[in-house]
Image 1 (cartoon, rainbow, N blue to C red):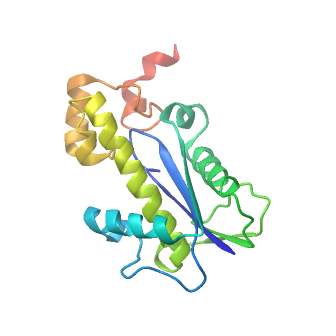
Image 2: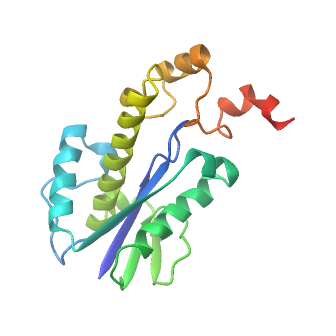
Length: 189
């Protein structure tokens, strides 16, 4: 069994990093499966439903902005990936991980650069991670109005910078990331 692993939200200023692991049936892939960044939100949502319905196993795990600040984004991403794979409930024969770094796993694993564009299982994981992370950010938008999380999902958009200038950071922000790290140096002293 092959498990694909990918993450969403690594470069954001706010919110968790979310990683997903997916095991697809051998030879099965839904029509239009691709890297989540190449798909419209509506297409991602449709594929998300189809992947969940047909996958042999899937799991997604998140690491919070606070934990990202305590460690770093690479460690947090690898931790979310490892948790996802270890929570699958099945033993994969091989784990394909999008990127160049491997999380600490007890299973055979390979890093696959641009894996979300070449492996169906990694592309499926990319979609699961992206859809779930986007849903988290939309939910936070309702709890923390004014930041625009529903539209920019925590990424470094002009509207996000304007909200930071107006409101300052909230608990969802990654204070170790620029432009927040420069503006929040007083917290270190």
